Image (tube, rainbow, N blue to C red; front, side):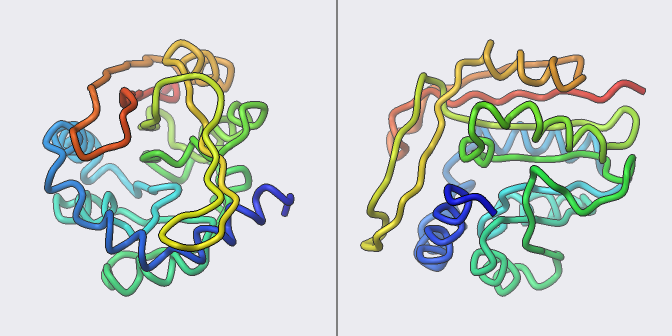
Length: 212
């Protein structure tokens, strides 16, 4: 594991329980996000396994599971996986890295990434999407959300813990280009302004499909 990934994993291990307390119920205040997840659930319910990458405490996985989706979650942080498992005992969670997925080719119906692509270095984003495309079934989809902007933000303290975590900001056209280079098509982009309780960046939601 690279040093940045070690910092990322260690940081989320430190704040896992605090993070869950802060964010596990966040969708109750985010109707726009819920509407998009409802559409995702309708599209992929009964179509096979859906995997949330960078699942954190599992709030998105929980939402999809409650709507009949066969969902599982993966996170780089083992402690976050432990927290997710305690909060959602009926959903399988595992530690893993989106740059090297432990799945067979053509085996997953969809990937969901709620603000987890922001921790992948720009030079590695295409490789991450290529790995997802390898694993997706023909016609499968990827749904990704991120903060619109340029450059990176950095935290060296979070929930009272010393961490070293970078958060990438992306422009919609930039992310669409990464998806296209990875072989995805039918790219759809929607945006919303931040809710008053969120970090003040425009939120971007992007979906794309693997060719049938």
